[in-house]
Amino acid sequence: MSIISVEENIGLPKYKQIVLSIENAVVSGKLKKGDSLPSINAVRNKFSLSRDTVLMAFNELKVRGIIESVVGKGYYLKSESIEVTQKIFLLFDELNTFKEDLYNSFVNNLNDNIQVDIFFHHFSYDMFSKLICDNIGSYNYYVIMPANLNQTDKIIEKLPSDKVYILDQTHNELKQYPGVFQNFEDDIYNSLKRAITLLNKYEKIVLLFPEKKQPQGMLVGFQKFRKNTNFQHEVINTLEHRKLVKGEVYLILDDQNLIVLIKKMRDQNLKLGKDIGIISYNETLLKEIVEGGITTISTDFKQMGKRLAQMIINKERFLIENPNDLIIRNSL
Image 1 (cartoon, rainbow, N blue to C red):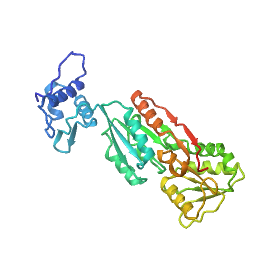
Image 2 (image 1 turned 135 degrees about the vertical axis):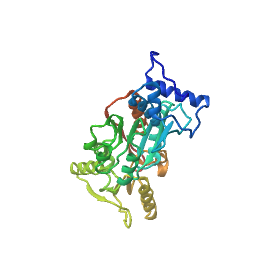
Image 3 (image 1 turned 45 degrees about the vertical axis):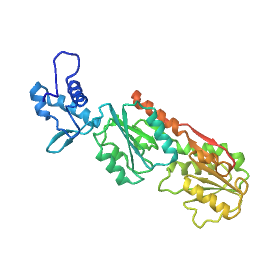
């Protein structure tokens, strides 16, 4: 019990004194990883505290990843890294080049004493649900990328609403949560309108839209553009068995299909930017180089990560639309 000290009238809340005592015990070597802590009742009785005061201290240390509770046994020291003051749960759909930029920007704009743990749901609702439910109460903030999964609000509402931020995609049922998002409908529509002069040299615009992963707003924005122009159009969900035809321009939403399309074009001896046009989605460094440059519709992922970090640090509770741009290159 000597590792914990609580005094009267020293200007520091008693739960903070408990936290500081345990931190000091770690620094001095009195507590090592795996050591047990005094029970909540033992601390409460020794210092005539309320159970809630002791629990508040233990919960803070638990959220920071310093201690852990074992059912039926009590609390143990989990980590000797007391410099971590906050932990953030970051749930992505998948990792790719541009989301790596987003992650790095987010982490680099946080304070050094904030720990970020990243998880991936891979567009699986069951995995989405399990990862969140398994980590309730273990983090200071939860940053969640719901992707195009339905009814994610049923899971997210299990978390404290003041600890949740939504990233990249949002839905009507999640509008009460702060975060940084892309407006896929407007981004597709406005970018295609900006490219109208270059698009006019093609006869048909084709959207490759695999519904499993892509935001529905992209399809809505494409259909809106089609209704307001005279372009022939087509929506497909795969390039398999497709024969390319001169005069087509393709809107490709993922990098794997971009590579497949370029290979098909080469196999048919079609010239990029003349016979076939390509507009890709999400900027990467590689797209500046491949085939002399690929035209891209993209949000600024570095800005998205930076802005989200600022929101968490400043405890801002806004829903912010991230800027988007059309980068015109050789492929159009």
